[in-house]
Amino acid sequence: MDVQSVVKVEPNPNVADFRPGDTVKVSFKVVEGERVRTQVFQGVVIRKRGIGIASTFTVRQIFHGVGVERIFPYNSPLLEKVTVVARGHIRRAKLYYLRGLSRKKTRLKLKSS
Image (cartoon, rainbow, N blue to C red; front, side, top):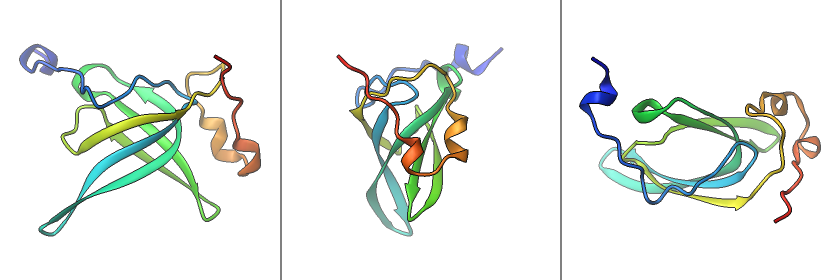
């Protein structure tokens, strides 16, 4: 017996449809002691993995010259909203090569639509 047969997963309506290479803004709740606040993380989606309840996506951002990556679970109650800022035109499913590039070279071509 697996988890997916026990727990019914419904898609979060606040999460937009996005793909690797897209620039997204992720709003999530941060719990600091008794306070709860919303923090926004904006960056490029470098991977999506998993299916069902265990699916995650990774967002990479350059902050003061240092690459910062954060992994977000799709079905977390702390995930408030995901909005797509720009659609990227890529030819790969995983963008790990962005880790070795400088800031200017990590710019992706925008999808013309």
